[in-house]
Image (cartoon, rainbow, N blue to C red):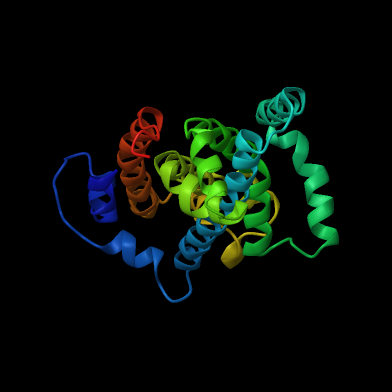
Length: 248
């Protein structure tokens, strides 16, 4: 993919392989009248917004389920519901979500895609947050309460730092899921400058032509962040699973 991205169109289809380095494919992607640059920016904004919402809401929900004394029946019911949502094919939920977003004017913009991606990723984030907060001893919360700390201060200054590796792992996983999302970007936008880059890649396959060079170039642009996140995620997930609150 990288080799094709830096080849000229003539060399890509030439039966005699030879390396002729060129930035032609990247220049075609980012011409003044092209929308791929804006689509990359859209994807970045969607990833940042949806990941931040999932981390904030998921952290509060996970901490509440883990340490605020909910009954086992309530906790298990919530976790079971969140887990079941992950098993439902997204396509079955898209029509109803489309109607809701249309009523609130959220179609065809980044804000709508941020909320839609949050809806689909928040249940998993909450489940994982709950399990990570379970590794933090409740005695630390009780000690903070005895020292006069409010629940919010205990959450922010005592419990969250100890669950930080797990929270980071959830954030990385969520970011990867949102970055790769295609269906909602296709359905909830009309394409063009409103869409994420995953939808833009599909437009490079046309009835009369397949733009192999630009397709490889945009593949490089979109794959590199994922590769880096996977490398980081491997370390963070291991740290999140093995690190407890033994530091106190």
